[in-house]
Length: 179
Image (cartoon, rainbow, N blue to C red; front, side, top):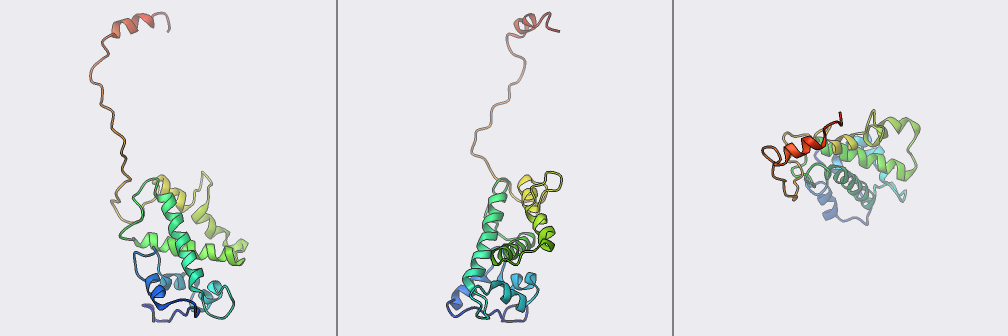
């Protein structure tokens, strides 16, 4: 039983150790139990993640969706933050399972026009209304906790020049008549 009060069934090819790892925070940003909730319950979860149509969700498919979501978040967030996130905030976990569900819907061919607004909320590249991933990369939204450490740089900082250049008068004469 998962923490939310229902069992998550997987096909016979999946191991119980792998299922347990999928629900351990830190392995993925989102958990299988969260993914079941985002899908709308056990029945819809099984329908979406049953790749071989045997009535049981396929662990490899769930693992692929969660891994893809983690990778996409890390690719965008790496522009501004240390990744992978640890500890995982609820914002990152929620977005990860939403991305996993959207990707699974596309892979299974059940993505319809009514899902476009959910897709755009995450992935939109519109400069007037960017999706959450672009907002994360641009620093317009935070990963859910303040303060998050910014990505550090290894570049040396230039020394600030104090005072005026020694040849200020020569430069001034060269500019005479320019304006």
